[in-house]
Image (cartoon, rainbow, N blue to C red; front, side):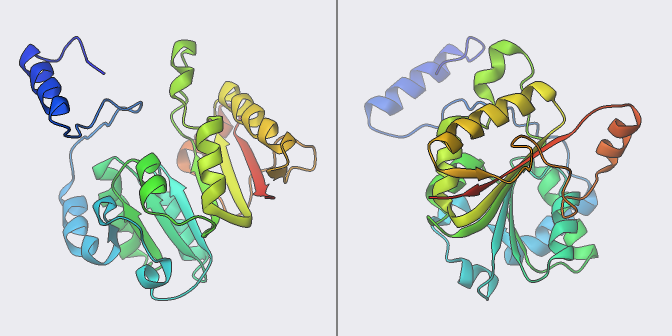
Length: 249
């Protein structure tokens, strides 16, 4: 895909590389907001990446080797600054957690907080989740996948960029073991309705079971920490919608 703001020589280089059969990374649907690392985040990355960081380039992982044990493994896509992910890992030391985030300061912040809370059952990728799921995680290997507050792409013309789409949900299902749970949460009502529509369509095919007693949304589960952002939203009357679906087949 070309970009009208890309210099002409870049397009020529891309075309030449493609003619030679070389792979060039294309434009993605998300925007990587790099930002600046604080000194604390940078130091945490240097200290903890060797023990807690996972590299997409290394390909498929053996969860038992990565964590040094066999335990239920939960993967979170897009953990932001990592506050809730670290809290969940600290509260469930009997489980393994993997976080995936493209925002480097967020990865650094997550590792820093994990250090401060002495959390050892957590590993992180700084990479695109679509590629990590495709290339690194074995099928039928996960106890849970969670996607909390993904980019809502609120403009209608951008809805096609939303992460929760039928094709991607099918890929997530393949990585969950039978009985594994997909947990979604958003503070955008339109996106919540979209998520529910996608999941109900897959449920009708017999692939998922909605864990909601009312067959739509569930109350916020205790294991998902209430963030400062969410607390502020509650005071302002903003809603948050949680969905949980269990893999059936």
